[in-house]
Each structure stands twice: as C-alpha cells, then as structure tokens.
Image (cartoon, rainbow, N blue to C red):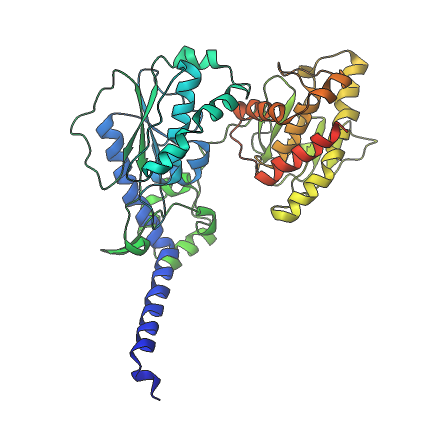
Length: 445
C-alpha cells in the first residue's frame, strides 16, 4: 500500500504540521510582546472611553501589568466618586477569564450583601449560562456569612461604599461608549478582557502572529522581561526578533526598577519586606543576594526559609538569633514546610515570646523577619501560624495558653490570613495553607 496516497494519512500530516506551527507561534516572545502591545491599546481605549483609572488585583497583577503602563498597584485607592476598570486576559477557547466572568461579580454581590444587607448577582450571559448563574446565586448568602466571619471590619468599608457595586463587561468584540457614562445608582466595576478571542488562540497579523492571552503564564516565556521592563524598553523589544530579544537579555540591556515593590525603610536594596501591622512581624523576600546576615541591620531575629545562601554569624560575636531552613518550591518544599513548621513556631516562642515575658514588653517592641523565596508563600504560612497561635484579634501577643488552645479553628486562621493580606499583597499556595491548618489543628491535641 502506498501510504503517501492515503488521504487520511495526508490529512493527519497536514494537521500535525499546522498544530506544530501554531504551538511555535504561540511560544514566540516576538509574537507575544506584539500581542501584548496590541491588547494594551484596547485597554487604553477602554480607560479613556469610561474616563476611569486602571487597576489590577493581586491575582491579575503579573499579567495585567503587561497590558498597560498606566496600571495601578492593587493598593491603589481610586477617587471615592469614581468606579474603576479591572483588566485581565484569557487564552484560547474563552471569551473572558473566570476572574472577570465569575470571581469579581461574586465579590461584588458578597460585598453588597455584607454592607447593604442585599445585593443581586450580576453575570455576563456571554460567559455564564442561566443554570450556572442560578447555582452561583444560591451560594451568595453562604459566602457572605463567611466573609462577615473573616475579621473584615464592615463599618470601614461602609464609610467608603455609599452605593452598591455593579460589574460591567467590556471585550474587544463590543463597542465602547462615545462619551464617558455616569452611574448614579451604583459604582461601576468595569471588567475589561484585554485579549480578543481568535480561532485556535492565534491569528496571523502584519509582521507578527497575534496570540490570545499573550501575557498569561509570563513566567514560562518572559525570562527577565517584567511588565515594568517591557514598558521601559518597549521600542527596543518590539523591533527585535526572538533571537535578538534573547541577546539583549543576555547582554543586560533591559533594566528597570519595579514600581510595585514597597519595602520598609532600611535595607531597601537587600530586602522587600512589609510590616504586618503592629505585630512586630515582617514578611518578605531578599531583593538580591545577601552574603551575610550581618548585612541585615534592622532585624535581630530572622526566620529564613529562602533557598538563597546566606552566611550565619558567629553567635559569640553577633547578637542575632537566626533560624535558617531552606524550603524549595514545589511539592517537595510543601512537604518540608509542613514538617518544619513546628520548628518555626518553637523558635518564635523561644526568642520572641521569652523576650516579651522577660522584659515585660509588648509585641510592637519585637522585630522578627520572616523570609522565603517569593515573599508571598512560605513566609506567609509561617507568619499565619504564629499569628493564629499567639496573637489576639487586635494584633497583640496573648500568652493565655489555655485560651489559645481552645480557640484555634479554620475561621480564626482565615481571619489571621485576612489580617496579613490587608498589609501585603500575598498569594500563599493551597498546599501551604493546608500545612498551616494541619499543624495548628493538631496543636490543640
């Protein structure tokens, strides 16, 4: 049999070649950067059409930052009289991301119910079916109760939110208003999907191939090109081929200071850390290689869970107390974090709590630094365990052991996590949170 003449085999080879070409196009840094720039122009049009600022939540910030150089950080506080535009993108096969079609609308409904005692769920019929809308709607009251138990002070929200929130969806397929609209009955939360839905996720354009959701999963393709680096070097990058992009990266020609970092005073070139209220606990990561703990001048008590090597000072010559447990990323790191979390807790009790008891001081007078590779995962888990065990609702150390052991439950842990999130943009993994819950629930026994 002549397989070359078999139409089924010929078709399979053809489609295989097309699929390979599409995958190659979607991985191209040149194509992705041009696609991001194309999407950013639409995002700018939306901002101007509605006369609103652009905001990225923590979950969106890495990808959203690529979408516009005007994007604000998640802690940006807009004019209280204005709504906002939240930007995200999605990859092939979807018209809009779940974050914009479901997550934000759910939060709008929950906040409205928590603040005003009522609030309908609004979803886009382009992305959410009627049956799914009904299923989500049935959960709003449960989620509102969980939100009210989280420790969030609703009165503070009510001071700023005098009208309910209502989502409005914008995609590249829809027309924009000719003049900025006004909203008298509610605050509009304009949910902008930056990427255009195209067949197979890619579409040939003049000079490049458009990749839908090009900014997604940037850690897999962008190398050292952060959002701020992209916008600082836009002209150079857009005129470069894939090979030339790699060349300028290797030559170190792309430099820009991140505009989203907010380190505490002191050691700003070494650390990106944030104080968790007045607890005396600081969490974060190393900004650069720290050769010796002596270089960290603002902290005498350090819990270092990062994998970057740092020399431990001689205890006879340096008045620092240091716990160094390198915890790698991934499943191996998660298992190790769970196993070593009791050591972290014991170290805090041995150093900080003993100091408070010995000197009759308060938690605000201690300074303990907790580091990990990301500044938003294992360090958060360690701080979360410590806050849950030893701190009260006001953020102060409470050494009443019997009361502590009786009170630890998932609601308390959730409230402490909310307390952390209020102060620093963090995104601990599910495995880390499960590890904290496992250790703390066992603490009662």
